[in-house]
Length: 332
Image 1: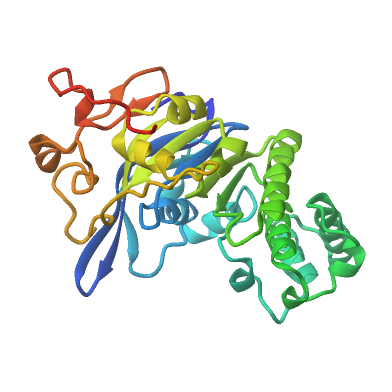
Image 2: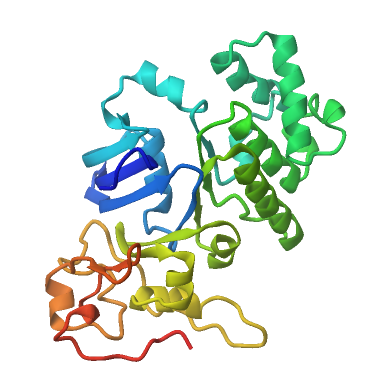
C-alpha cells in the first residue's frame, strides 16, 4: 500500500460476498486500489463485474445478505470496517457521499427536494432549518438548476430526469464531502444532459478539491473526468493505470474488448462473446478465461498475479509472462 498521507482512500485485498440459498456469491475477490486527495478515478466494467458492490462496501450499505469477508478499507487512515454504526453514520453523507444510479427511486416522492437536501445539513452541519434552506438553494444553483428558490419547494415528479440527477448531486455535495462516489451518474440521460453533468463534476472537483470515484460501464465518460482507471471483471481487477495507459496502451484482453465495443463513427460494434462468469461457481483461474480468445491452460487453473508495467500501470494476465506466446493488441 502507498503512504496514506497521500491517499484519502485505500482499499486492500477486499473480499465481499452475498450469502444466498444457492450458496456464497463472491462478488469481490481481493481488489486493491487507492484514491489520492483531489483525484478522480474511474471504475469500469460490465454489469455484474463488482462496480456497485465496491461502492456499497465502502459506504457499508450492503444488503442484509452481503458481507465484507476480508480486507481493509481506510479513509484518511481510519478503518471504516471497524467503526461502529454511529461513527460510520457521521462519515456517511458528510465526509463520504454517494450519487446513486436511479434518482427517481432514490428521491422520496412524498417530500420536496428542499426537505431532502436539507436533511443531511440538519443532521451533520448543526444548521437550523432557515440556514439549511438557504444552503439548499445555494446548492441547487451550484449544480445548475434554474430558479432554485422555486424548485426547492417542488417534488421529484415535477422535475425532469436531468434535474433529478442534479438534485442527487446537490444532496451528495451539500456537506462538502472529501470523497464523492458517483455510481453511473449519467445513465438514462440524453447526451446533452450527460455532457452537462460531466462538466459539472469536473468543475466541482476543481473548485472544492473533492476526490471522486466514478463508477460506470461507459469508457467515454471516464475519459472525460478521470486521471486513473480500474478495470473490473468477475469481482477482480484485470488492469489499472492512468487513463493514458488504459486507453492507449491497454494490455489485458478484457480491456481490449471493452475498447472495441466503444461506438466509433460508422464502424460496426464488436461485442465481447460469451457471458460473465457465474460467481457461485467462479473459475479457479482468471475469471475472463472462459471468454478470452487467447486463453491458455494455465489461465483456467491459476489466477495470474499482477505485472507492473509502469509506475501505476498493472495487469493481471498470463500473456505478460515471459514464456507466454506473443499476441497482437486486439483493439483495432
